[in-house]
Amino acid sequence: MRIISAGEVESALDFESLVERLRQAFRRDTQAPLRHHHTIETAGGADAALLLMPAWQPDRHIGIKLVTVFPDNVERGLPAVMGAYLLLDGKSGSPLALLDGPILTVRRTAAASALASDYLSRPDSERLLMVGTGALAPNLIHAHASVRPIRDVLIWGRSEDKAAKLAQQLNRDDFRVAHTGDLEQAVRGADIVSCATLTKDPLIRGEWLQDGQHIDLVGGYRPDMREADDEAIRRARVFVDTRQGTSNEAGDIVQPLESGVLAPEDIAADLFELTRGERAGRRFHDQITLFKSVGTALEDLAAAQLTVERT
Image (tube, rainbow, N blue to C red; front, side, top):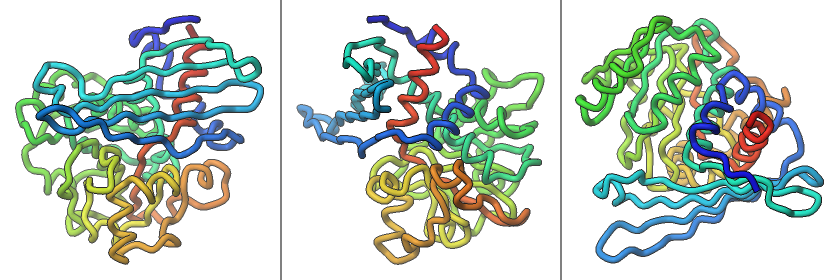
């Protein structure tokens, strides 16, 4: 069995290739049950979580991602999210490769947002606002820039120092990166707003949204987490990565469904329907679109297959 490091995974998964691989993965028949989520009690600290995410293609590959989320790891100087991905032969079940889980996850998550943006954001989108400064932030910036002509990037975070440091690290010749402390004005001026936070209280207000914007919500993965308020949901045409996953796990979808702000039939499409041409994406230049993702194991399987092919 091969062991594939974080650096090898990152090198193998350029966003242009990964976006296209995910497009094909959503079009084909891949089995991906809803992930298993187990709460792990810890002594004197925040509860941890164990996530098990299986997916398979008959006679080709079986894969499973094992992820742990320990929120208190930040205080220990460790990543909150850790894990590994096991790829197995689909005919014999024999192990083929063990891949670094966190890098695989951030790359495929960002690529899924870029895939959605390819259908939902305006083709002339040049200004990107990144809300959040964690491991996903740089990946989301580069992923969106792989499908749209991004020229100006603003980063907002609860810690302005972290936002400034990340902006300095990412500033490059082909697009300008800066930080901001004014979230409202940054939202109002963006073509694409990408959020990757762990907030429980919405940061993005519907009253701030402008015609033609695309909102990309990545961070909230539990029903008690929200990145955008009810007014944002009301004003936008809503899309998701998977209907089952977001309707059960994502607060940005679960809470509006429970309150009646959003009805199941108001979800315009998921990535299966968009990639297969079964539902339309953006219809008008001035339409506000909103994409919510919680991730699906088929994305991990597609990313793992591409990595193994290239290493």
